[in-house]
Length: 434
Image (tube, rainbow, N blue to C red; front, top):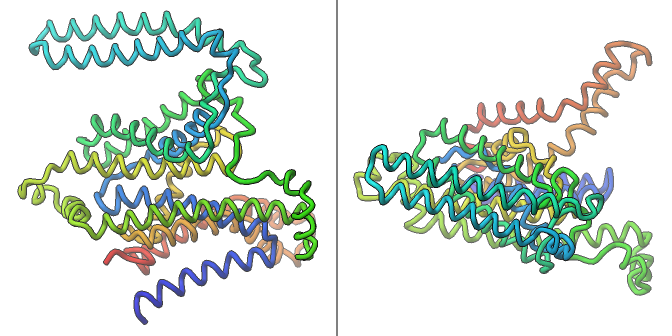
């Protein structure tokens, strides 16, 4: 069997599973799995770019995804005029003062001769700058967060179309990745993993606690959408007539129609990113990155700037994760910082890359869809299986109750089993790197 035929059969089987979900459960559930599978595939492409192309062990994926989600709130929400009048200017001045402090500290480090004078100069700049920063910031934050805290209590955004937030989310994640990469990419792989995980936790902690930025754990709800609202479709006489001609009630038809619109948008983004990743993989740049991955010492001896190339691909992969995060927040319609759990979901994305095939973009896409499908469906399938196994037991049987209650924990168990099976029988993934 050729590679093309084998790959086509795997994708066809995956499509069959989604169609089976629509037939056996509901089409709403099937299309939701499809949409999240598209987003997961984009995240997996970003991680594959970093790990599969360059061997960078980034465990801070959810930090960049969260920045993409933050971009949706900052770009698409209308500005809160009262909050800006209360303390918005002070916050902007404080942020500029903080940035100026960092720049001044860097300049002093570069220009003052090494020794005690440089240390004292840097400490003086940082202490004075931090004091000024907090003195300006704190009153502004208090004033902004006091403006109707039940509904707003933050500055709002720019009021632009929500699709604009998707590339902005990528740029925001790329900027953060550049700052992180300048300091962390010189570390060994295990230390890089610890550093990126810690930085992801810091990003999410800031989002949770800085209410003036995006309401913190109060969440930003009612985000604008790039597709029609279901209620508007249900009020449209032509849509209702069309739904009835399909033999479907307007409510169900409207939800399916909206989700299919999301599917189309997400599929376009996935195809564009996939084609760009394939072009990069087959280019001289892609071959250079894989050479650096396989032997950094030899690549450096050939005149390649390893640190610079690592920074490039770290920024690119993080930008893709930021775009995916913006898409996911748009699909949810709300920004909820409490749902970003770095360890849990970073593990899931890494399983997607490893199972699909590290270093192969098509494998990353397959892994994204496959693992997300099982992540969603394992719990209901496990519950059905446990009920079937214990069908002959009495209702009050302790073992029966334990097995049925354990079905809720089958997700992580199944992910581990899938990972072990793939590593045992296809250690390079379902679609290995050529």
